[in-house]
Each structure stands twice: as structure tokens, then as C-alpha cells.
Image (tube, helix red, strand yellow):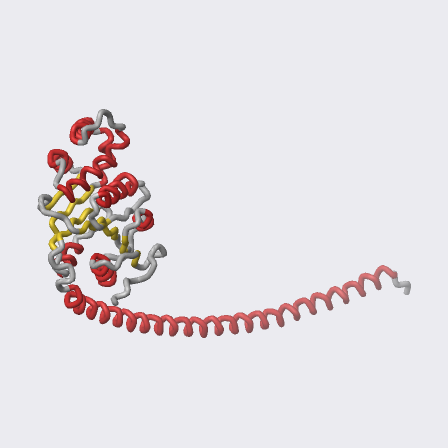
Length: 292
């Protein structure tokens, strides 16, 4: 019987195709088993690593609790020692406090100074509304008359107001202007401005870069320095926009962490005559003055 060659070719191709399919199925079965093993191995490794991370987290939390406990002890110790250290160090000194920001609170400064024996004769808070004074024609006229000026650029009103505030703080001048500023919420003035001032503290810092340091703080500092009265610039360590660099350019001492015991201690030592720039920021020369 005659057999067609085409039949052999098809038969042989079918055999090889069947072998190929068998090999492919077998390989896939082996690969599937290997894949499952790899997945199980990976899951086991991940589970082990998760347990390790979980333990590390527990250890870190325990360490953090220990550190926080130590911090609390040091804080209690500092708060207990500070009144003993500060007692009578500033006895007999009349201090005027000028706050140039609405963004941060410096109410604890008065208690700190009182603890050191100082007499806080006045507290002047300059409100952010002061920047609106450029459109206050009544205030412009009062400034011109009070300072005997022939003309005033409205943009210079905040700076002139700052000079008036500084002169009133140290010399009890321009009471009518101060009264107007107080009544119109440009400032809040408390205390006895007729008493002599031995030292001025200016407390600043801002939440945003509004350039008020150049309109308010710098003119105040320059005016105070002209009257030969020592002045120190302070701020909290958590202010968003620091004024310390601007204060340093005016060659005055600074403390940039006045909200805590270290900063309070530095402030008192500076006021005793150890000048410099202290605190926790890059602008500080050291953390605290050397207490020789």
C-alpha cells in the first residue's frame, strides 16, 4: 500500500507538538510549585521582619518614655533651682518690656523678671494693626505736630510711630500720641511710663515675613540706643520667622529661647552684663553665657 509522505510529516509534527505541550505543561507545573514555595518563603521573611520592626517600635517607645521621664525630671529640677539662682540678681532694676508681635505670647517674662527682683515698670504691646497706620490722616497730623515735622511720607508713619513709642517708654514723651495709639488699638500700653528705665527688653518674632521688623523693631532699637539705655532682643525658639539676625545687626545682645528656663537664665545673666547672642538657633554664639 502506498503511503503519502505528507502523512509522515504530519504524524512526526504531531508527535513533536505533543511532546512540546507535555514539556510546557510539566514545566508550568514545576514552576507553579516553585512559585508557591517562593511566595511562602517571602511571606515568612516578611512576617519575621514585621515582628522585628514591631519589637523595634516597642523598644523605641520604651526608650522614648524613659527619655521623656528624664526630661520631666530635669525640667522639674530646673524650675526648682531657677528661683534660687535668679533671686535678687536684678534687684532694683527698672525694666520696660516692648512686645512687637501679636503672633507669640511673652506674658511669662514679667514673672521671670519679678523672680529676679526686677521692677517691670511698663509693658507696651505693638499690634499688627500698626501697618494700617499709613492711611490714618489723624495720626499723621499728630506725628507731624508732635515731632515738629513739616511733612511726612505716609509710608514712614509706622517707623515714626515706633520712634514715638520708644521715646515714651524711656522718657515719657508724646502722651497724647500714645493715648491715641492705645485707644485705636495700634498698641496696648500698661504700666507707669513716668518711672526711669534702666533696661529695655524687646520681644519679637513672626508667623510670616511681613517685614515689620524694619518698620517697628529696628527703629525702636535705634531710638533706645540713642538714649544710652541697654536693650536686649528676645524671642521664642518656635517662632516661624526669627528676628534675631536683625537684632544682631544692631549690635545688641539676644536670647532666642526665652520661653524655657535656659533662655530665662541667659536673659538674666545678659542683663547682669555678660553680653552676647545665646540660644538654640544658628544665629546664637553659644547655648548660654559662661557663668564665671
